[in-house]
Image (cartoon, rainbow, N blue to C red; front, side):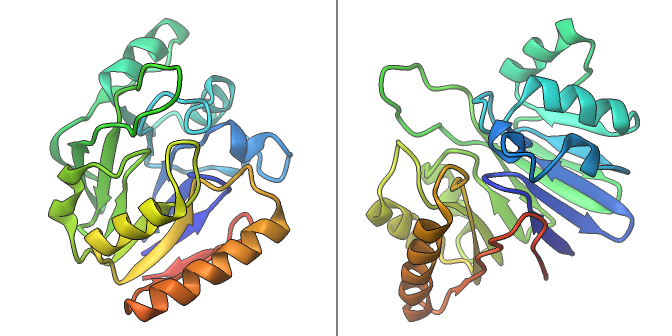
Length: 220
């Protein structure tokens, strides 16, 4: 299985000929370093919640148009929003299902509290029992996946601190971490924080995989 990062929370996961794209939001495309046309032959597009840094209407229309056989998997909030635009989506909020060679599990995980706004419905997804993408959540429901191989870890956000990030990773205790939710930070700052996280997680026996450039990947 190969995991590639395309800025912020957008991950492309490949297993054989199957590909799943997670959270192609505005932050991935705003600088032109990544284009919707870059994603082809997808088996599924998975959207954790409706915030624009995870879900971009325009980009999604292009990606879905380029991948007519791809299934869009998401929650009920996004499904109702996509329907008027002619984009079919399947509500997948709990349980398991197969996508090609992939096994996906969905679990409702409450979005972290945010300032001056109602929190959206957030669904976390587990891929092949090996990778957890929590969306914007450090919810206790995710403790069930303690010891998972790979955690896509939100490392910076208006709704968290570095201490809370570190505590969530300690709770989940994955073998490896991929940092996500960092698409609005300057390169020099990211480098500095990545180095600090890498130092901290190494003391816990957790590998830290920066995936600093769009398309950087790991094999697992």
